[in-house]
Length: 160
Image 1 (tube, rainbow, N blue to C red):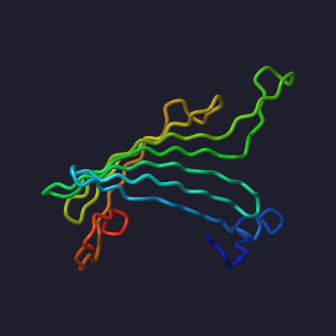
Image 2 (image 1 turned 60 degrees about the vertical axis):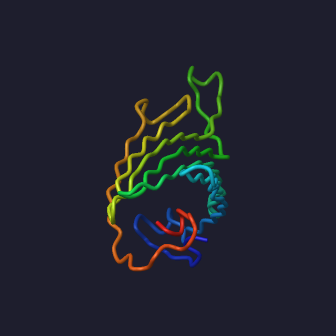
């Protein structure tokens, strides 16, 4: 549960801003590490619910990992779907259509020593979209303070 303790921020106005920012997250995943291959696979699912607005969404993800001498290469695909619809009109007010928010995001990354580089492209797969070209994200990271040896398993979510 995120933001379990109510907090009034008063950024905009007391009339417009709620003190309930609670969000419930439920996730499940599994590491598939076949003995006959150098690859590991991680299917996972995430459910999100915002208490105040009752907005709900689900993410379905698939990741693949491979270790090399220099570090780790990884990539995958993520799909997000909102359970809440938005109504819109395209031809004046004669007909009202409904669409649910959908995102498709392929991603790829590499861990080299303590450095991490990743690229993500997000495409909004709806009739009415914010941008037809999608969204690009580049992530640069550095892992500070890693002083423990990884566990004796190929567990990407724990070891990296």
